[in-house]
Amino acid sequence: MIRTTLRLTAATGLAALVLSGCANSTLLTGAAATIGDTSISSKRLADVVQAGLADPQAQQNLGSDRPKFQRDALARLISHVALQEAARRKEVTVTEGQVDSQIAAFAVQAGGQDAAEQQANLEKAAAQGGVPKAALRPYIRDIVLRDALGDVLTADLTVPPADLQKLYNQGLATYDQVHTRHILVTKADLADSLLGQIRKSPDRFAALAAQYSTDASNKAKGGDLGFAGRGAFVAEFEKAAFAAKPGATYVVKTQFGFHVVEVLERRTTTLAEATPMLRRRALADPRTARTDAYLRDVANSLGVMVNPRFGRWDAKAGGVIDIPVDGNSFSSPEPAPRRVAPANPIVPSN
Image 1 (cartoon, helix red, strand yellow):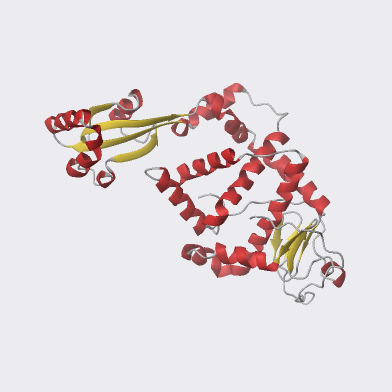
Image 2 (cartoon, helix red, strand yellow):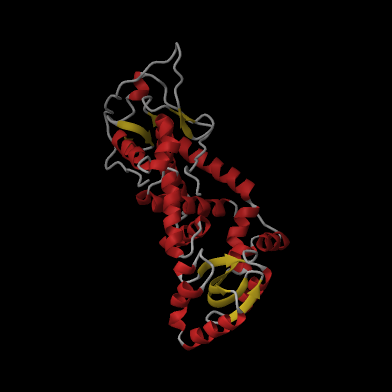
């Protein structure tokens, strides 16, 4: 499952809301928080929380502590604004194609027999984590943008080629995958007969799988096994599948019986293509440290104010935390109007 919060660590010393009339006066009426000239309305926050808890599983997992979920949602909205400004200052942009690629990668991680099922599983997992379908793409766009910002901030660091190769080999099951379908039977002569029929009429594969395959887990799907990397199949099946070219059909014997197999597609990511991702893994610690430090500086320069009805901004953690109820605390009313409101305040998309 993808993470359900984009964390932004703000600078130590970043001005958190002081519980006083002066601090309140810096907030627009109805604002849950402001960051720089951007106002995040209480209604916008309420809409995000309601949408995030719409999924029954999200309600069960996160709704039991609704105030905390609300604080986390507000922190994510604040972090979105800071990230956008940080990217602007560093002239970092991402394309919709990059967002599409990251969504596809997350979908593969979510699992499924085909792209449609993988996407559905991703959306389901995200919704259960408090990110509804409508917010998923903007959410992932922020992940991609943060990664791109991290690339710029660590461009001066080098990773030895041997380290990149080692990481590539460790992830080979991800970088080299094959998409197959099969019909599993117990007798060799039946397998040979089915292979002949398929080679004569390839479009009959799914119907023959539904009729003859003893593999109940996928026969209803035409024997489709989806994409799988090395190590997913028994040795004989794997060796034949990765040796064949897309479009090839053949019979292979394993401990389970005789498989009539068609290789549908091969998906390979070369070392050169994987290098940007591998660099991110190799430089994970300095990337996090430098990115968080820069985002802290940006948030500090913008200034973050949180309506005490929802909590207060934690400068070190970069989140919205609860205001403890004790003898020195009090509840806060709706903030008073700010005298000069920013023109065309920006409402973050997520």
